[in-house]
Image (tube, rainbow, N blue to C red; front, side, top):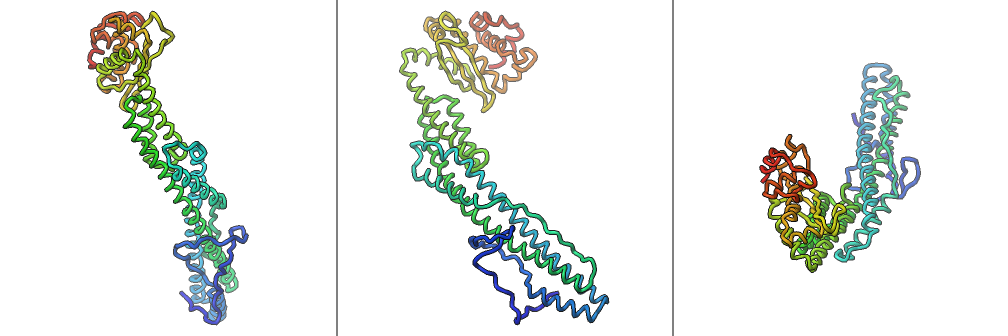
Length: 417
């Protein structure tokens, strides 16, 4: 049941200069929030209801009509408390999430904004992100987390005496009024945080856009870069594409992106410099041979005077294979291998073949053979058997270091072609 407004006793208009916080402190007004205004319970309604209840109580006493009237008013007031509480709970939840996001964004991005700006990132783009970060930090530091506590309200009263009912309605009206005021305050704060978060995310995306564009250029312009450096850059870009300000990327991700771009460019420069080494023509022949028998497994190469502590007088090599990203490997050879290759020593070629054999276990068709009962993931016996299967039944195939595999093992490894 609703009552007409009292034109002789209008409700006071809300004061525009300040409002009360949850703790009862005066706080400055916030930007207006374009959300539906919560339904207000006017004080004048309470006064009229009180008079009506008193009159009804005097006329009806404890009759059924009085009980129905009082119960209906209590139920309506209770529903208004619950509805306003739900609105307050919802805006409190979103405000808390926005505050957490803002603080996490500011903290994460510091890793990038406090780092030197790379030359390939425009100063204006970097400055826009730094300014947006400062603004978001200032806005988020103004607020504290406020847990929502649902007000204690009962859908009934202890009795239906008029004065008991009036007191109960006054309490419920006060709860509703407090909920509405707190909802407006927290909704305004939510809007302030959102207005600061939006330019921050846009500026972070702009920074990532420029860096990602340069990364693509670096990949195209760096044919001599290692497979590993290129793969690292591609991994970072994949994370960035999924969300620049996400918890998995953020400022640390932008720093890693810059490092990965620089890594590709440095690897390319090193590759170009290696071509000036007098030994490069022989090394290029060895690397080309290795790739020709690798069955498509990507290979990176390193050359050192000593490998596994062995240098002059020894052929020595290692292979580190990875089963991720489709499988790839890094092969390290000592300088003696290139000398033996030049001299036409078959053992030098067998050593190179042996290291490529290690990398074959990343291939889907070869992994079951390597993991099966013939080898049980014995890396060295596998690589030796695979090398012998290619016709290098010599000491450099691995026989001298690890012994000769069985005929069964040689036959099983030979299936990996």
